[in-house]
Length: 233
Ligand code: ADP
Ligand code: ADP
Image (cartoon, rainbow, N blue to C red; front, side):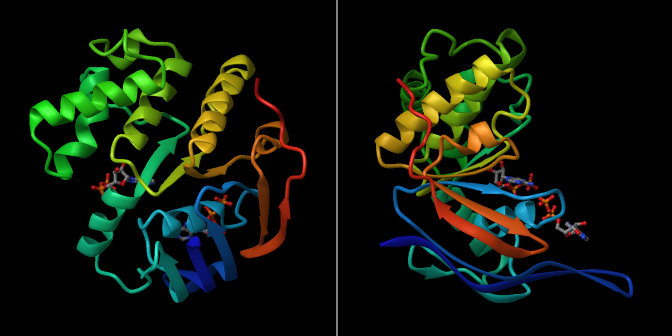
C-alpha cells in the first residue's frame, strides 16, 4: 500500500514576469516502510519536491496523495494539520530551540497535537530514550555534540508517530563517524517499519537507503532499487 503517490507533479515559481519550472512532471510512488534517498544536482528540484511531500507547499499542477488523502489543493490550515500528524522533519541544521531543554524541544510538536504536559513529557522522554539520550533530557542543545543534537531532532520528528520521516541532508553538518551513527539510527527506524525519505548529495550516505531517486531539471532521471544497501551492524 503506497503512502505517497504523486502524479505529474509540477511546480512553477513566478518571479515577476519570469517563470521557473522547478518540477516539470514528477510521478512517484513510495510504499509504507520504504527507505528512499533523493539525489540530484543543486537546482534539480529536490527541496521543492520535499516541501510538497512534507505538505509545506502545494503543487502548481498535478496530484499528491498522502496516506490515501488528496492533499494537492488543501488550504494552509488543512495542510498544517496533516503535516503535524503525518510528517516528522529532520534538518541539516537540527533546528532546535536553543533555550529549551531536550525534553521541551522534543515535546514541542505534542503541544500542537493537544496533549497535556504529563503526556507530553512522557512521550518526549520515550522518544529521547529510543535515540539513546535518556540521560540528557535536561540538557540544552549547546551542551550536546552535533550528533547528539541530531538525535534530539530525530526524537522530535518521531514523537508524534508520523507516517513519514523527511530528512533534508541529515548528515550535512556532521563528521563522517557521527554521520554513520545517524545512519545506524535510520537503519533501526527502518527496521521498525518507519517510512524514511532523505535528501543527500553524498553517495555513501545514499547507499544506506534501499532506493535511490535521482532528479535532474525537475524530472525523475532515475529511480532504482539499491540491491545492496550498506550494512549497519
Ligand atoms: P534543489 O533542492 O535540488 O537544489 P530546488 O527545489 O531548491 O532544487 O530548486 C529548483 C529550482 O527552482 C531552481 O531553479 C531554484 O532556483 C528554483 N526555486 C526554488 N525555490 C524557489 C522560490 N521560492 N522562488 C523562485 N524560484 C525558486
Ligand atoms: P513555519 O512558519 O516556521 O514554517 P509552521 O508552523 O508552518 O511554521 O511549521 C510547521 C512544521 O513544519 C514544523 O514542524 C516545522 O518544523 C516544519 N517546517 C517549517 N518550515 C519548514 C521548512 N522550510 N522545511 C521543512 N519543514 C519546515
